[in-house]
Image (cartoon, rainbow, N blue to C red; front, side):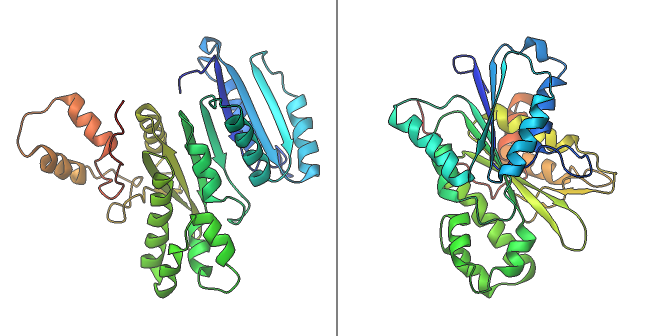
Length: 299
């Protein structure tokens, strides 16, 4: 993202303690290390502001200790907020609105412990600002398993920003999961993301989760797709691009380029085209015919 007055913001909505009992680094330390260990760190002149939000005070205190042990350069600012994500982040956005200001270019990672604390309307309010991107964790198999049980209505209405999820109650298996997946994708687009891409990380026995990335910036979309394709296809983890139900496998023992070739043939229908046109089509449309982009708003 381009700098706004030299500032970039990264938000971790459910930060956790920074490091877990087994010594594994949590997302705040991973986000900081991504910059600290970057090959081109010295070329980045912007101020980087990290906003870590955590509800539990013991985790906040541990995170503050972990951050204090880091040798951070002067252009890195860390703000650790104690509070619930919904209340804390909404208060931050409301304050910016009231001042009539714009949010600096911001990437928000929304990774709740469950699915009841990440309301779609708050994500939508965030996405109304220019130059914002979001990466949302969704435990889709878990949601699909329990979607019809009593007592879930309020949480699911909040998660999807609509009660249209109720249609999934009469469905089962892959049909239910695909419907809920597409509903969440479509809601992110309706709330402000020009493009939404998702990928699934399976952990065996039908478990796993989805990560939904929303952006209105072509470069942001390109960088995320590049990161998806860099994942190791032979480590035993299976990464699945499930933005479109009939084009599920992204990472496997081999990459099947036949669907891309068919899509290119259909798009250009034998007419001459440049490498740049093919590249742009592959980035925006190919293999994602169901992930409709809203019309260009123009200048």
